[in-house]
Length: 317
Image (tube, rainbow, N blue to C red):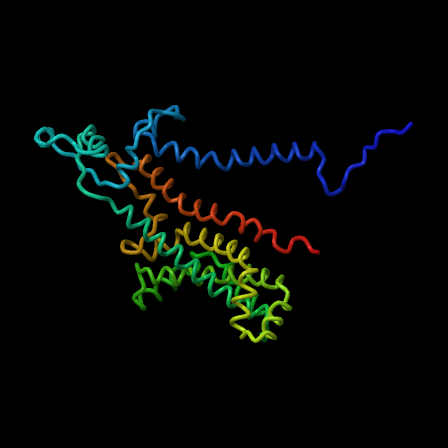
C-alpha cells in the first residue's frame, strides 16, 4: 500500500493559494476602478442627477456634460429666446432647454493640446537624455560615479513646492512663464533623474560582448550603441517613458504656478470648470474622462514592453 503524497512544488502555487490570490486581485481591482467608473458615469448625467441625493448610480444618459465642456453658454431673456430660429445640433438643443444659447467654444481643446505637447515633449527629451547618460554611466569609467548617481537621484527627493518660488523667479527673469518651452524643460529636468536610474539598470543587464563584437566588425561606438544596445533596451525605454509621462501628465503644482493661459495644461484647468450654478460636475467628469484617455491608450499600447521592462533581469540564467 502506498499513501497519497501531499508534497507540492515550492515553485508552483497550490490551488488554495491561487484562489486566495485571485480573490485579492479582484477586490483590489474593484476598489481601484470604482472611482474611475463613477467619474465615467457622472460624465453622462445631467447636472441634477450628478448632485442628486441619494446618489444615482444609473440615470438617463445625457451628453450635457460634454456639451458644457466644449461650449460656453449664456442665459438670455425669454423674449430673445423666442426670437431665435430652431436650434441646430444636440448641444444647441440642450442649451435651449435650459434657457441658454451657445456663445462660443470653450478653452478645453487648447488645454488638452497643451497637455499633449508638454507631456509627450518632456517625456521624449527625458528618455532621450536619460538613455545617453545611463549608457555613459554604465559603460565608461566616470569619476565619482556613485556620488554623481546619488546626486542625480537626490533631485527626486525634493517636493515641488520647496523649489517653486526659485523656479518662478528664474522663469520670470528668463521670460519662460506660461510657455511651452519652459514647461517642457522643467518637466524634462525633473524626469531625467528617474530616467537615468531606471535605464542604467536595464543597460547594465545587456552584455558588453555584443558591443565589443560590433566594434571588432568595424562599427563606431555610436553605431554599436544604436544597433546593439538600443534594440535590447526597448523594454526598459518603454517602461521609463510610461513613468515619465505619468508624472508630466498629472503634474499640478508647477502647472498652476507657472502657467495661466497659453501653456496651461488640463490639471489646473479641470477644477475651475464653472457652470450656470457653480461647479458643473458633469463637465468636470467629462474633462477627467477625456484627460485619462491619452495616458490609458499610451500605456495599453506599451503594456507588453512595460511588463517585460519591469521584470527585466529578475530571473538569472
